[in-house]
Amino acid sequence: MVEEKIDVALISDPYRIDAHSTSWIASTGTNRAAIFIASNGVTIANVVRDPEFISARLNGVQVYCCYASPNQPLEDFGDLLQRLGDSIRSTQRGVPVLVTGDFNARSAAWGDWVENRRGHELSSLVESLDLVTLNEGSTPTFPRGAGSIVDVTFASETLAIRVNNWRVLESVFNYSDHHYIRYSLARNRESPSPAASNTFCGWETSGGIDSNSFLTGMLLAEWLEQGIGQDRLDADSEAVNLRARVTAACDYALPPPTSSQSGEDPSALVERGD
Image 1 (cartoon, rainbow, N blue to C red):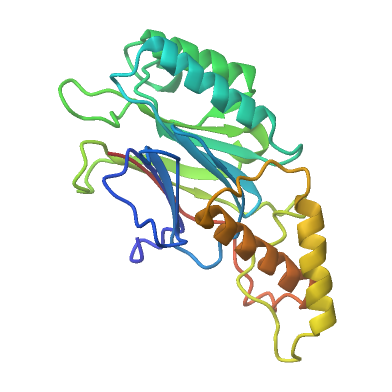
Image 2: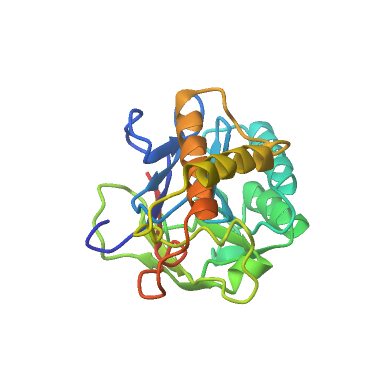
């Protein structure tokens, strides 16, 4: 990931995760979905955990990573879609959404040549949420047998136009029976939201930091979080939320770096289904 300059990895059914690292955020229970943050330039907030998906606001984008077992009864799959849909609909207005994962659902809507019941239900949910399907072409994401496309990527319309070069990495070996999916996310330069404005790496610190301004920034960050559905029931959630508050406080107390130091939104993302 370092060589490829990947900022974020979205992993369905991970083989293992490092539960002691704040770089990992995982779903509850058996960790069926996980997000790995590989860049210090990615801010994390609004962590939402579910047994079958994990979500976090990364540089102003609410990102979802999901996994639905192929052995799951259709009724349980419907319950997953209901919870996922409810969570997406509760996202703060104006915040773009990215939904990824291995749903073990097949549909022509994302390039597969077969449609199953799961694919029909997932397509209906995507349509009801006004999400855009980002899958391109007909390259199988799961190459076993005749192959199938069960790993999918959806986004809000405002975010979809910022996604570039979505592709299935057929030639990259990864110890998985699914191919990697890679794409990049262009910076939103037209109408940056307050959440998206915290995307540069670092601040101008040559003049020092005023402790009163920093404290004010911390209080402001905590106040702004009130009323937003954040999971604070475990240490990992508290760690990522503290990081987000400190980042917001530094944004308040310190000037941004010069343009030559300024970073981008997460520039490269990779999805993997294990």
